[in-house]
Amino acid sequence: MNLLSVGASYRTADVATLERLVIADEAVPGLLEKLVAQPFVGEAVVLSTCNRVEIYAAVNTFHGGLGDVCNVLSEVSGIPATELAGHLYVHYDEAAVLHSFKVSSGLDSMVVGESQILGQLRDAYHAATESDTAGRLLHELMQQALRVGKRAHSETGIDRAGQSVVTAALDVAESELGDLTGRKALVIGAGAMGALSVATLTRAGVGPLRITNRSAARADRLAEAYGAVAVGYDDLDAALREADLVVSATASTEPVLTRERLEAAAPLVVLDLAVPRDVAADATGIPGVTVIDIDSLATTRRSMPAAAETAAVEQIVAAEVEHFLGWLRGADIAPTVAALRARAEDVVSAELRKLWSRRSEFSEEQRADVSRTLHRVVQQLLHSPTVRVRQLAAEPGGDQYATLLRELFDLDVPHATPANAVPEIGGQA
Image (cartoon, rainbow, N blue to C red; front, top):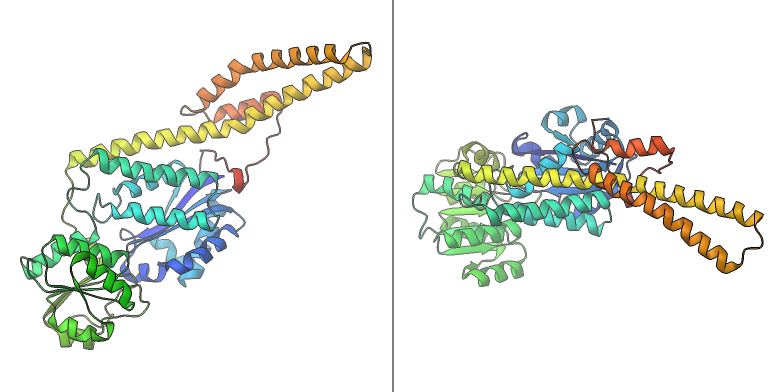
């Protein structure tokens, strides 16, 4: 099995395309099941955020796996495969490991160094675990990616410039409104992004701060936690008219903020952090209303960590990638070493059976002594070579040792299955 990652993000697709690709939480289990049902896909993890949708998969071949993943993405998004191809990036084997570690450490984020991606990646891994679509390869990749992300944030200052997309959006809003301290604000949505928005607005000194959500109970809990005020969703229009700044981050599949609503609420600055967008497509160019969405942020990113901090994270990522590749190479040799030991044991057992057939006078105790002695001799002969070959296999280029052992001893090593997937680092084949 080989590692493949396929995705689209703010780097390769506009919000309109991401809206069609985004996977709602409740749809993830079905998508995972559909992916692993494909002929070339053995394992799958789906990461879907406000500015990226990525599939991590363990595949039998590059082209077959890529075709399967792209076909599934095309089917669930309704985007023709030919159109979708222009928005996708593809990483295979070593490049896929590097990409996953860059994502987890925040190097690939819209706001470089933001830590929110760690929680999103953890949720994606948890969903795959719950659906039983993460096998040995993706379990190891996800666990190591999360560890690398934690290292990046604990050992460097990569996250000093900006903690999240919300922070970047507020920077842009400040350029429109001036100092945000004391500005009346409204957060629409009490999910993960809504909660992050409330926390960030509170730290920025915005207030009074109101929260509304279709589920009043969630809005009440969030408001109580941050000293804000919850308002009924039916009172959204009145709350909009009283606000200077609105952060909208719902999971609605239809626009929440229509042109009519926003015209009645002007003047207003709206941060639309939802995908699909909460602001209606025709609600642009309204006098006195400024809308900042994911597309806007992608072109107006400002805060960037110091080059030294970014370089420090890149060094961590590079070292961790090599460590992971060493694990892959070492894991690849394990079935071959096991097959070699099994072959040796089979040879010893066959020779002992021949000996017992010729020397029937041996007692059971004598037979046991001879058997133990022969098995110990074989184990001692194989010990140093197998330890050494494991060490060599973990080094760059070490994948050749498994092939050489199989050829030299004519070993039949079964292909890995999704349950015990062991990848081979190599070309795109």
